[in-house]
Length: 273
Ligand SMILES: O=c1ccn([C@@H]2O[C@H](COP(=O)(O)O)[C@@H](O)[C@H]2O)c(=O)[nH]1
Image (cartoon, rainbow, N blue to C red; front, side, top):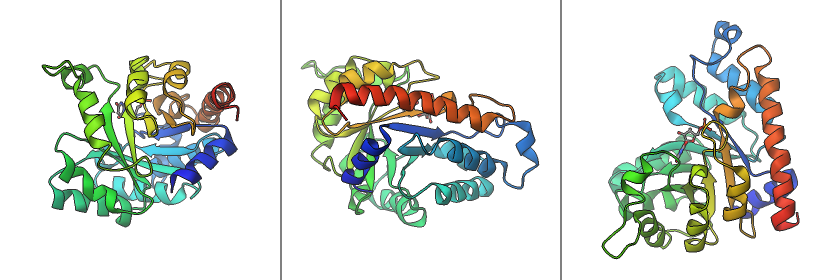
């Protein structure tokens, strides 16, 4: 999917919500466990209940690969079930020497037809470039993550006082363009999002950390929105585990709707959509 189509979807749905499919067999409702593929059945019902409110789905690949062959099958079926108008993110956090990255790109962009993949920047340009060679596919590079440990490296400063995340943004933004590269920026970092926005004014940000991790949607919009929205805000557990009873899909739909309604207000406020 290209940037224009993504922005059209955001305007049409008045939403920049990404629903995270972090589907854990230990957390899905008991009545689904009798199904042949409980993970797929859970995802299918979550997708049915939330697709009206969301512009992206983000399966976290760890939850599927931990289950071996069956997990990969559930992932493939889930991907095929997601409507083509909705942006898909393989949250796989890959990146390796060039020839290996080429095969990761082939796995997620050709063998599976994801629109985008999260990539770690640590190994540098040759580990990222192979993902950028696919038309209308996206690299979502980790820039400033939502976890505590982001302080260990990302926020440490060079002798000149520049934080590492700034170096990553400045350098990597020359590898691709705002048409094929986004950045992960955690919602838990509040006003830091403004610093990132100054360095990369045009790029989309994938923003995890609202919901279960406590980040503020209002702050994300205030500090991060640009003229084409420029945000995909993810919530995983806050939506998909809103209930663990038979009403799980309905409860997920309600949570997604609540976030979409807040997003519609913020889009009106900052973009007059
Ligand atoms: O900085 C990051 C990068 C990725 N994630 C991922 O996003 C979701 C968040 O899930 P919640 O349940 O909404 O907290 C999850 O898949 C993480 O691996 C992140 O949280 N922070």
